[in-house]
Length: 449
Image (cartoon, rainbow, N blue to C red; front, side):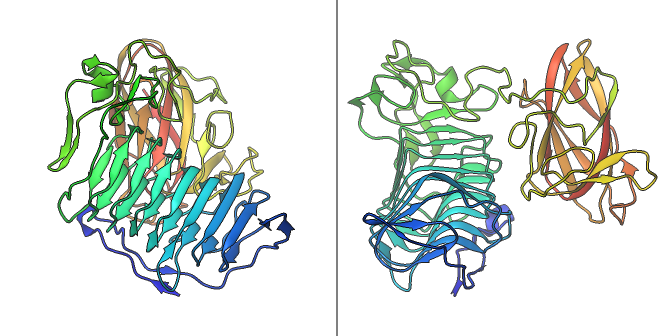
């Protein structure tokens, strides 16, 4: 079955791609009362209630859960379905020969897919309690109408929530944070309603081609504890990684920021929520990327003690494991030098080790001690057979304090070269540096001097 998707050429990347869906393995199913147990990748083509009974990890099928008919409830029961970051793959897909309606997807985590949850041509689809992370698109409605996304999380994806050609959908009670390209991306989508969400990304809302059709970003004020613990429901909580979001810096009254937030013509949040509402009676909801302090909360600890100036071996990333010390979009089993899911290779001259074929969205943390305030030079020993590869280094205590390191084309992964030096400002104290890959390269070490 071939599916066409609408194209977003404006941002130099396609929201419209061909998704080839081949025959899938059918997960073993048995009855559990009125529900059907799902234990592996499955095609659901009969109405009913289906329950995932275990995690599905590192599967390389193009689609893990495919829902082809209406009147289906799919309950993940808190389980994780994890892919291997394959192009055009999907954790959950809703699509049929005709319109599919009255589908519920709930209590599920998706990770490592091109699409975490993907609704194509759905109507009245309800997505709730879903956690979508480390996908390219976390949750995609493309297109969808009269559907809802509630009480869900989309974090650490490239795009958190995407709507293409979609209308009359509602997004509420969600936490959309730490997504690389945009928290919410809208392409030709109008008449959707977003309220009572926490939104914190470098780019919170991106309008992708086709102008800025009108959407609603708040509801009428009503007395009810909001997602930040304030006394009333209205708009959304708008945060920024560096603490300069309107919900963090604006004047407040009654739990709302007094100044509206204009995202684009026809897209105005008239009742932004205060991030720290005065007199709040409930603890605000938090999620990864929504920290209330500048202190890194990664939980990572140094694998090797380092004091600037120093040379940092890339394979000596912080302790803590996947999601803490590092993230691998395509996990592999590794026992060379360190046990984990990051590919490590021995140097050709036998002098040590390096990270090999690091992909887009891989990241690593490194803890360093800085003896005094200053501007330091950062350079790295890397290799790549391609042009245009690079990575960024972030000082997590000051997110806007970052540098871009371009990787020279060395014609081979086996031939290393040292990059040009770039300047990184660091203050005295302990710093966690996050190295985020935006290309494909091998990585030996970086120096701070």
